[in-house]
Image (cartoon, rainbow, N blue to C red; front, side, top):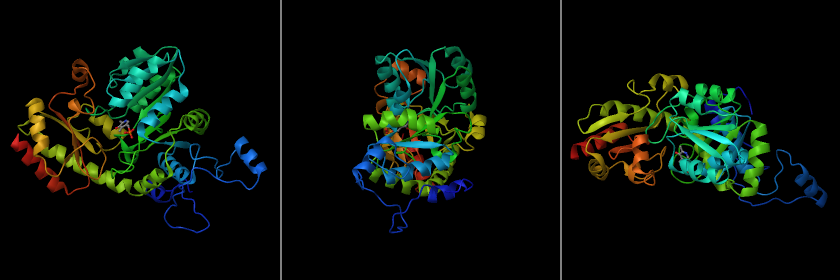
Length: 393
Ligand SMILES: *Cc1c(COP(=O)(O)O)cnc(C)c1O
């Protein structure tokens, strides 16, 4: 593969390996294992396997390897490990490197399951976690300790869309000798330059924009070759979080179109956010691409665009939010994002239901908040749908 290819060329051709049949579309190697020519070859491969040598699908598979190479090429990461879901990636990246006595600093505004791993699971194994307001650099600085091993955050938080300064937090973390792990789902691989900006490890839920058509769960961990092969791979291959070959094929196909999809979805999100600002039923419209967003300048510098998701806060609280959701015809009520289908979510009663009220309030997850993931439908239809549903409120 050529390193000087532009992103869209990498997305179509990166990582492709053809079998002896010369297939155009990537093959799905739906096999759990591989046969050896001899007992000696089996012994040698278990001792040290090369890049085109596979043993068992929990360790690696040709279709999965193609996906890993393609996403690594796009992100300009040395290496990648594909996982069964986004949470397998988040959990794997953290658990593979942490041990009892270590300390983690994490942004407070996180996806519900990420919060569960940090609040409930890591402390059980003697890892202490300090939560900070991710946008407050002094808070990151104050939380660092000699035993801080990891700083973890979502570059754009879910569902309140706070944008965290990857370069600045990385500088603080590196000064303390900590590894920066960024959950980059909302930034998307299309707008991400997280590694270049200082992050050491990037994780994605591939379920979101990489598949982008709501078919399958997947995830990926990207980082240095040493981190992926020496730290992540041994943990993942022995604990069973590998991506399936069929999923990898879906994700390879997703990458081929991700640039076109995410840019179109972002243009729609931006247009909707602008059009909805000032609507009498709304207390706020939150979108990092809007000039009035608290981290708008940072968003432009870090990503160059606001992404595919906006959030709106209805003045009438939960009752108004539910009336709004129930009145929509094109948007579907669900909890995925980055999908071809536009999706609305009420975080307070679904994805973040588990959180105590005080924590919801602290995170800005108000009863009227609705997360809006823009899909690939016609922008005019989506805007008309939003307006009629807001009028119905
Ligand atoms: C969806 C999501 C995850 C988890 O991904 P799954 O594929 O559902 O396991 C993690 N982080 C963020 C920010 C997400 O949006």
